[in-house]
Image (cartoon, rainbow, N blue to C red; front, side, top):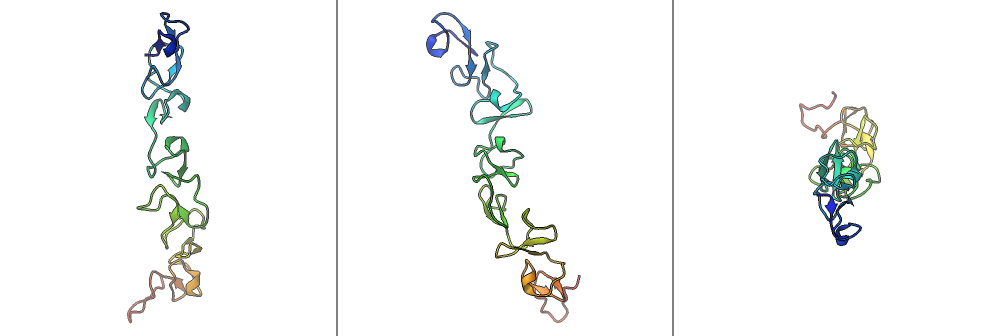
Length: 171
């Protein structure tokens, strides 16, 4: 209920009911009293219509997500940070080949696994073990240092050295 009948609860004088504005007491759970009705709201139009710890998801106040949970916007996260599609402890993951959605470590900034792509790299590149953007497997190379994998075989970045008698990496 969004009405109060005592000064302690928000009424002007004891014994006179008044519609209250905001969260707290009286409580409407995930919603905030608008002041225009004695009833608790059942929908929201913005985050301001939701209690602390909630965000407006279309028209429903929804609990904010924990660190590491999938997100599309920062207001969905308890931390206030949606980075790389997950709720992140940090506001951004500074540096090349750093991300908040590294598998098994979601929610904190970590080095991207070598060989995998990152937003900080061009589309034909992947992260190396030294967190640098280098050519992906299948791309032309002249030396091992050109490749994210560290393997340049037959003029192509490869997943291994291809040292078997019947192996080649020419794709």
